[in-house]
Image (cartoon, rainbow, N blue to C red):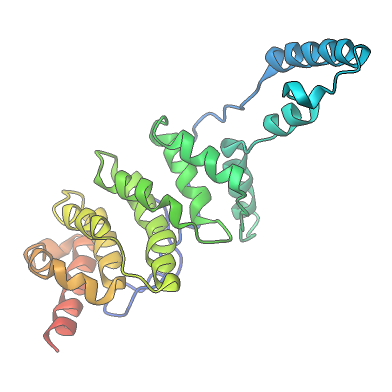
Length: 249
């Protein structure tokens, strides 16, 4: 089965305002971040130094030596792979995941983003799609992913995340979506995967008058009647027809 399944998809002619994957399929190994022996060595060093400077009556914090508590907190930074697995289990049990991301969690996801293979990137996009709050700081990375040479599945996941963390966030802030995002959507209109084209058009439908920038490109991307035998091309054709009527008014 290619791509994720989606909730509340009304393909034919209506506005499509929900693009939320409800299942993320895959069998990637869940590697666990661990500090292991390094933490033990650091703890031993801290204990030794603490005892030594305590004997000399020198305050430990003056020397800026990391305490065990700080090391422990660092070791508890977000394990995005474990968080992904937790989301999958909740979805299997028909529980709606609502991930609360702290500032440290956001930093971990941002730092890992460019260093991951596609399976890892899909996990991060899954976490973002189920985050409780909107985080505009991810907009540049989502746009970068949409511009990259990724599989159709990753692109669809990124489009799903863009709905919340770019479109919805910009709407709340009262600003236009970035032109870089619009240009990334333009590029995907020429993608050879019909499902990517369909979801790209669904996003364009949601950016309102900003989509007029893409009017000519959207019309050129309209599949032929014969091409509409493919369900994704059929949906794409219907969305473009709807946009043409809207833009004509």
